[in-house]
Amino acid sequence: MDGKKKKKASTATENQKLDFCAATNQLLMTEPSIKIDCIVAKKENVQPHIRTDLNKLYNYMCKLVMIDYVKLVPEFVFIPDKRSVKVESGNSLSDYLQTVLWFECGASTVIDNHPQESHNNYNLQFVDWISSCVWSHFEDGESNVYKEISRPVNVRTLFF
Image: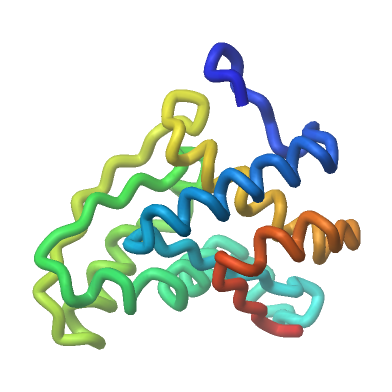
């Protein structure tokens, strides 16, 4: 990614994705405190009544991935992509996660929620690339890219 213009992973070539995976592997070797965890759901195996509001499934999946990482810290900054924030749902993801932390985990962790547009945030762009590399394996069978990214990234599956 050249920094001048956002390069979307969905339009990247396999070689560009492999270069991204190599750079990610190098980053994670030099910065072992960085953890990357993904979760993929096979939506057609989700019960029909749950599929009526996939935002709740998304929130649940975020809980499965995030809670263990943050329940022992006093505060964490949460930066979801603004496109993932569903106004019609009534309860936001950050409110849901905060409730889980306090009531289910007994944690005193405070979530500092700052939704942003991905085109303005390199961290969100990085996460989009990771997600695309993982997703393309399950959706398109791009195994070369997945093999490279799944080594340093914890990939979970749900409803498979």
